[in-house]
Length: 348
Ligand code: NAD
Image (cartoon, rainbow, N blue to C red; front, side, top):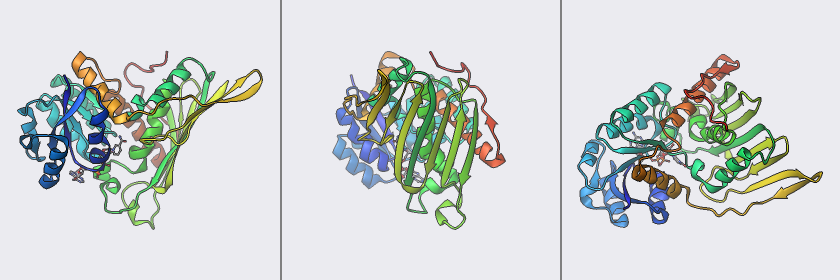
């Protein structure tokens, strides 16, 4: 059977990526919509074959409990709303897929994890890159020692945010600026690709006083994270530069590069490795797949087979712990240590 998803929030990501991805998914179907805009919801429901009885607004969210076929609630709202809606979904006993970043604080993340445990429901954070084939190949290559010992990860994920009135520039709705929205891709990649957890960070923020977009949140964030093995990850994220996104992993025996990286389509991977004393370039042929379909299918399989998602609540919490350490480091202007997560590193 196909696992039924309720989509909460019909913004850009839901309309342009998530709903179209059901067509290529193997295990999922959209069965319900939650939106504050009823005419829009009616139109989208007709387009995707969703029953009118399976549309509700935010106030009526709890109606999802009685709607037939709703197995998973996918929260696609502004970051600052994830906390409230994950708690409400757990209370009505539904499994939850929640967009990144998980929430605005570690305290909220911890409450969300506890609420899902109490409600006996699965919680997955939508780190689509961890389900994307090129990243999976890269992760495997690192684990197999194809680059030798990993020494450094360098990454950038930036874009230009235009509209100064959008929620992404509102601290309460976004939790922060470029760092939790786009910088989180670099941070999360440095953790899952290396298999290590950083123990210290040093960071600096740029928040131009003369730009009306950045009254509440940072325009740019530059980070150096140190890992127990001696590896470092250096990354930049920006909201006031033209789209730029790449990822480079440097090891003792070679390097790997994804450029462009982090997008929905068109990532390119290459390896450069020392072979017989020469630098040799390798361009592995990896078929592009819809990351949202892969991510939702992972959640569906977890529901069908009663498994824990690869990117559960702890994954979102750990990124949030590091994000908080990054902000603290920038504020205090010094190297800041990061509390080790329960269960420590996943290396090996
Ligand atoms: P968006 O602004 O396009 O959509 C947000 C939706 O929330 C809209 O339908 C809006 O009407 C609704 N909403 C309800 N209450 C609101 C309020 N008080 N203020 C503003 N909007 C409100 O945003 P989006 O780009 O679709 O992002 C939604 C979530 O998805 C965010 O958490 C974001 O970080 C995440 N996201 C993830 C990816 C990814 O690749 N995984 C990409 C983009 C966005």
